[in-house]
Length: 423
Ligand SMILES: Cc1cc2nc3c(=O)[nH]c(=O)nc-3n(C[C@H](O)[C@H](O)[C@H](O)COP(=O)(O)OP(=O)(O)OC[C@H]3O[C@@H](n4cnc5c(N)ncnc54)[C@H](O)[C@@H]3O)c2cc1C
Image (cartoon, rainbow, N blue to C red; front, side, top):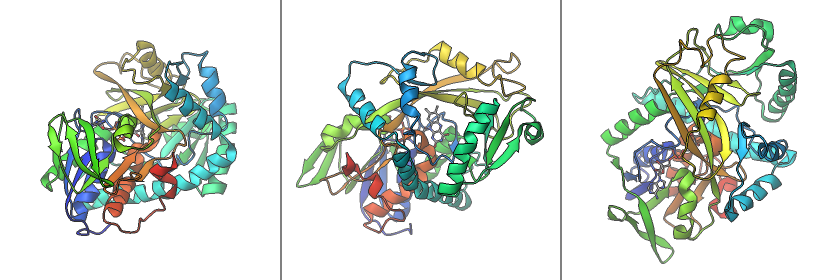
């Protein structure tokens, strides 16, 4: 997106990674941008996620096996994927629509919609780190999928084949006996791994801190503890926003409220079926030996990410509403699940010390696709939300698209599949 095509003002509601990326591209296009957040900037789901920027994650959560995993989770409280029965109609409608899409054909089709967005985001991240002083611990090191058992390794070979043949995403297969030579932090006796060397990683909280500061210097205004309460409309346009700090008026309005977006549906006069998908992470000092590569352990549904000064384990997908507890058994589960793989697992006393436990609510759509585009019936309203498990990865491409739409330019990626009007 070239600078200078946009004129006027924009208010972005939501200061997560998506709101920041929108602010970046809108400001570069020439708009004067204000970002409001009802809490702190970057303190919600974008704060302590696993930090993967992963074009390899092209397959949506709506996979044929997801339905069975969901039903089984009703009887297994320790399952990483968990649905808690609730007295809310919305969650059952959401689960029904999700389940309808758990077919092979729909999974493949959703992957085809996501892939150009994933590729664009990777390119945009590269440009961002090349053209600014931002660091954010950006590392193009790849992502290692490690398997404990021969069955798990063999079963992933089918996924690998599908990713290679359908999307051209070829991974390097590493046999168990080569693994310790690949990363010294791994234990002997593991079955093997697949290495996606086009994936990258960064430290989300650090990137957000640096990006916010860079945007502030280039004129973007951030207003924390400012909640959007009402949206005033007239003649098919938004006229003002009523916030906890008073009224705000602008030429364009971007809504990037993450998991809370469904609360805005009535105000915006459209359907926004987004459910919070809760996950947890544990950040601690680096173990010795510390993994050199970001890794996933798919059999335990766990991700581990080494940072310059720390190390993070993240996992779980719970549909439990906006429950803000951090149960000790979930944190214990995160610790224990590294045991089969790492020489110095997270429950090692030498590692335990200063630790940060965290939860985040992912903005989950029932078709696993984000919502990017104009609010139906409101010319100057734009939605940038519903990024599911990939908000960090997809942020730059989303920001670029929002700026292109605000400038009434052709979009660099086809956005029909992400239209807010599809619900
Ligand atoms: C354990 C875990 C691991 C993950 N790992 C990865 C990963 O490795 N890679 C990846 O790509 N993604 C990952 N994700 C997903 C990613 O974190 C999310 O998709 C992303 O953070 C969503 O960003 P967002 O800006 O939409 O939402 P958020 O970061 O939640 O921001 C939304 C903001 O909107 C504000 N807001 C809401 N309502 C209002 C209102 N009415 N008025 C004003 N402000 C409002 C909130 O306060 C909040 O700050 C992970 C998630 C979890 C939980």
